[in-house]
Image 1 (cartoon, each protein chain N blue to C red):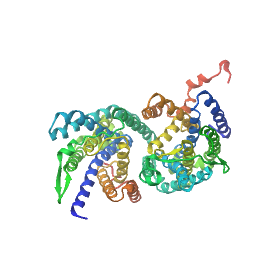
Image 2: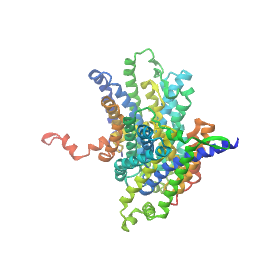
Image 3: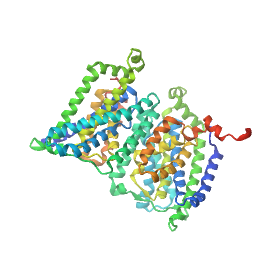
Image 4: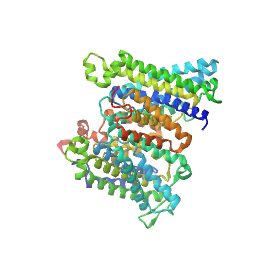
Amino acid sequence: MSLDTIARYLLDTLFFASLLFLVVAGLNIVYGVLRIVNLAHASLFTLGAYVTAWFTASFVAARFESLLALLVFPLIVAAVITAIVSLLLVVPILRYSYGKGDAFQLIVTFGLFMIFEELFLIIWGRAPQQAGDAFVEMGSVQIFGSPYPLYKIYVIAFAALLALLFWLITYRSLFGLTLRAISMDPEMTSALGVNVMRFVIIAVVLASLLAGLGGALYLPIASAMPGLSSEVLIVAFVGLVIGGMGSFIGSAIGALLVSLFRTLSVYFFPELELVILFAVALLVLLLRPEGIGGGKGW
Amino acid sequence: MVREGGPWVIVGIAVAVALLYPIVSFLRPGWEIMLTYGTVLAIAALGFNLLFHHVGLLSFGHAAFFGIGAYTVGLSAKYFGLKSLELHLLIAALLSALFAFLVGSVAVRYRGIFFAILMLVVGQITWGFYVKFYSITGGTDGVRAPKPLLLLIYDTAPLSYHAFNLVYHYYSLLWFVILALAMWYIVNSPFGYTLRAIRDSEDRARSLGVESWRYKLIALAISATYVGIAGALYAPLNRLVTPDLAYWTFSGKIVFMTILGGAGHFLGPILGALVYTYLETIAQMITIHWFLVMGLMIVLIMVLMPEGILGLTRRRAFRSLTKLPFGLR
């Protein structure tokens, strides 16, 4: 293997891991504060992607020539719309399901997933929605003598920035401290005078925002279409299981490991992608049932 | 003791469904086949509910077993020219049970969310297999399931589809009665009691010397066998076997049927499956967006009537509706 192939492989892994991290981290936040695994979480990723495709194609690409507009405007719109939808649709359902048991939560969020799937179909139809303008405009850079799309590197940097911000909020702010306290003992936190529900709502909206941003960043190199939510959800679940539930480091490790094996299998045995991921997840579960970063709490 | 149901009620339902077929086909031609679909899906939902209600494990991957059953019929007919449906059912049952043991030996060690996620991923793996190995499975186009040989002697191939549907309805009902009766005895056996003891408190059951994972594994295998047989029965009825049958939203449909009828009742999954097929047909006549209706219904059922349709019969408002006048009972 030549040097440029290895570099390309590593960068692809990082690119995929950054997007996956945004989804897994969101799943982790929701699990942390509510003890709910939200089956509709990946639908917010898809929502972000659809909104970006629609907004880029119908507003930005026609009016603005500049790359900056292509990068910034769709992202903002996707973030705002995901947050609003999350507040109106996801938050009430999760709030109602709180403390009602695993089965209830899984089934209700599955219902939410179905609602999202069909709403996407009603609004955007079956045809894949694309808007690769930002990806094309950015061009590519030379890495060890062969071109690599600059957009992917931009996404890696952007996600790394988000992850850093997320880390600072969780571990270096009063807000994060409160969230971590809620994830450990909501009753005690409430007894200390914290309005737990308000924090939970903010946390869920933040988690949705991360997923929506992930979708918005993903769109320019791919397309939004039916089935995307399921695909993302399954891979994110494997990441969640490998990394461990309710842990920040776990989300990052899980996303990285999943991407590593996924990119490997896509390069060598594309048919066995999920089998390999599942085997890795089983291996991790057998060795460390709580996941690599899990078991310690936030 | 599981209260509702009982051998005679199961036989009664089967007789009712048997009698309904000619009536429905007279009143609304084309709608009678939903009764057959409902009967077949009822077997799957019964199997699912053994794990869901009696063990307390929610699986979002039971479509995997349904797919194994359906593809057993499609592929063995395509490659080996196997015609006897009983042989198909036997192979489907064995394969689903084997797969359940393989997956379950790891999965049943986990509860709640972990179990649901593991089964979900397993289901998606089988779906990916059907889609990606298209040279064998026909990919998303699927494989055809021809009209089979029934009861080893009755070849249905020369029949028209109209006649075949009629024959096949009663054939499916026969399997439904056998399997529903068997399930009734399973849930009322000491084995069934042990499962519910594990569900209510696994620690307590284990402290009484029950090797809980062994029971859970066997329950998963029985559950998978039911779903696998249902999948195999579904194939000739649907004539076409596609990867959709193994997709995780199909698992969701099995979950939906069960909670629609009422997971806490023995007859719930049966009623749910029968109601579901008509609900889907009616909804698809009104709107093409069936998933939206179904998603909304799932949320509403879980919030407003978590015990499903059969749970309503316990409510006072319903009782006063069904009360006979003049104090008659």
